Length: 124
Image 1 (cartoon, helix red, strand yellow):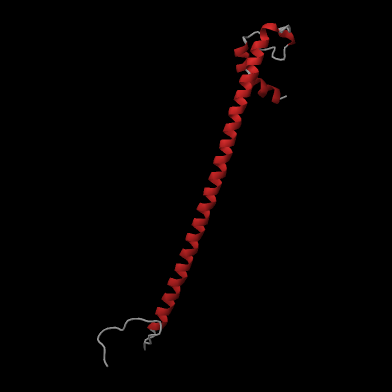
Image 2 (cartoon, rainbow, N blue to C red; image 1 turned 90 degrees about the vertical axis):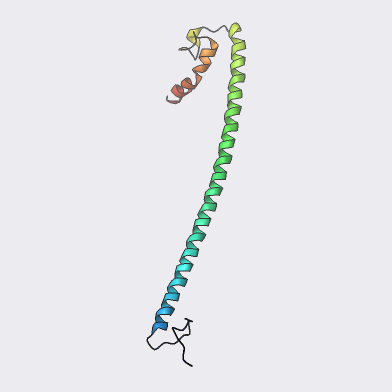
């Protein structure tokens, strides 16, 4: 039986010119390439998962810090109100005050200077 045209390739096709060897090598390269692509996609997926988990950790940390900031601001307001209520009854003179540079200012202006006072105290 004679056939017209080339035979379809199968890994077991035999050829007199050695083309079956070339085709097997091509198939091996393709399989190796598919494996490498699969491995790369898996690594990319794992990295994306890691980044997503890190993002979630960072968002939780940010939320916790924002809650802490809110609580600290409320605490500052609380102490500012206590200080403001105490001011009319305070018998200390400005020269004895720990806030001597701002003691002559109204209490609201003194409170605004507290963050800079902490910075200057921290640098001692």
